[in-house]
Image 1 (cartoon, helix red, strand yellow):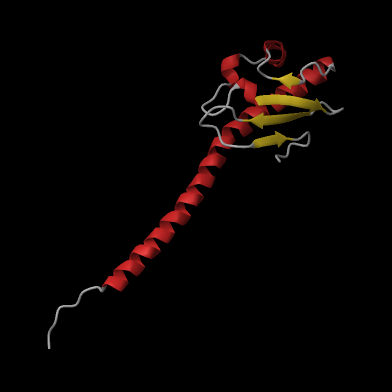
Image 2: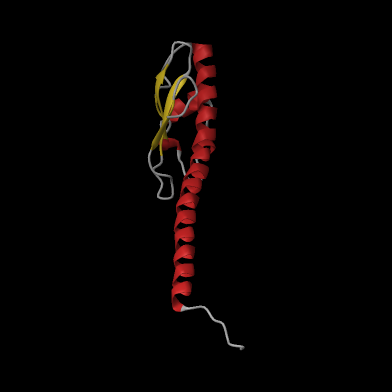
Amino acid sequence: MTGKKAFTLIELIVVILIVGILAAVSVSLMTGRTDNARWSEANAAAGTIRHAARVYFSEYGDTSIIGNLNDTLIRSKLGFEIDDLTGTYFTPGDYEITAISSEGFPTIVVTGSQANAPSGTKTLDTDGTWR
């Protein structure tokens, strides 16, 4: 007895359902990875700002660099040109030094303002940790 074997409609629906679930999970995982990759631009720039602020505080001992890095005077004190902090997802105005510890370590708050920037705000604390 030879007959043609084929998939039933139920089997095809189950396969399509499984593929749909896998696609939905992978899209959400990719979105998280994309945001992490975008935040890495801010992490690198904030680390550079942190180092420059520490050097400035060590040399001059004042906290006149507290403020938004859109401010030309603050940027020049730290040795940055506007293009140095302009990236694909973040601009100089997205970085703000909100405090400086007694050892000269700044607290830097980063909030993306560009349309393609990741959502939310991150803070680089004086101890070098992100929250």
